[in-house]
Structure formats: structure tokens, C-alpha cells
Figure (cartoon, rainbow over the protein chains, first blue to last red):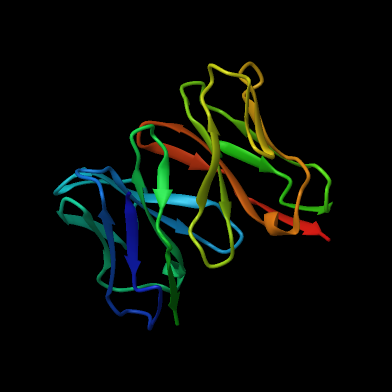
Length: 111
Length: 110
């Protein structure tokens, strides 16, 4: 069965520091992968998606970037965090029927 | 423009009652409509989903009703239980483009 992992689970970072969040998927090959951000009391905002290694589509221009160095690895990065980057970051993969399955999430607090 | 509108923002239901959450979408090209359940601090989990070729789908106590002409769909939770207390998100989209509602916080009172 497929499993999606995210780490770290929680992160507290100062403004201006770099960021690296990692997502890995097991049990499937060449999945479409997604990064979402969920702000408190709001819905999910699609940040990036990837259909393959090195292929990244950005949905929202911002301070963040994404990379896919391996088939089942998706990384979300920032060179300098802003206060507004705080939120719950979710990685998802797309199943064969089109459903997106989410990971456990990373809670990021920027102080 | 908000692609998916969800209501109500919060809902309180007595145990055994029916919980109803509504969503409306804009783009007629959308062809997949999932509902997700999210508990605090966890990622959303797929609850039930529907495609526009059917008007209703039922799985256990959960039912999706779909009205293609009105561009609306709703989630009905029958015999609501305290364990159903969570935030529910509808979504609509096609391919890699999915848009989520802003969520409904459901509280089921014992």
C-alpha cells in the first residue's frame, strides 16, 4: 500500500531563516505530487505540483520554491522565511482515480 | 474569484442527527468532487468522492448529493456521532488543478 511521509512534523523558525520541508511517498512510482498550505481557519491553497523528476509547476508566486530530486521525493524550500509563511504544510500524491491523498503535514511557525 | 464556496463555516448537531454541508463551484470543466475529513493536527483524509455522471453516492452513513445544473454538491452525514466531530472540506477540480472550500467545523454533541 502507498504511504506518504512528511518531516519534520513541527518547526519553529525565525524570520529570515531558510526552510526545507521534505515529503516522500512509498508504494508507488512516478506519482504526481503536490504541496499545499493551510492557514488557520482557511482552506487548502495549492503551492506547487510536480508530474515527474525536475518538473515543477508553481501556482502562487511567493517566497517559496519546490524541487523534485527523486521520483518519490518532493521538497519545499525558502531562502528567507517571512512571518506570512507560517501555516500547516501538506504534501499529497495523486492516486490512479485522480484522488489526492495527503500526508500528516508540517506545522511551521515563523517568529 | 473563489472557485469553490462552502457553507456553513461551523455546524453543531445532536448525536443521531443529520449533518449537511454544502458546496458550490464555478467551473463546469470540473469532473471530480471529493470530500475530506480533517482532525486537528492531521492531514485531510478522503471521505467520499463523486463524478458528475451520477447524482448521488452513498458510503455507509455518508452521502454526496450532486446537482450538475446548479453546480452544487453536498455532504450528508446520517446518524451523526461525536467521533464525526472534525473539519470537513469539499473540493472540485480536474487533472492537477483542485480547489478546496474553506472548511466546515462540525461538532456533534452527545
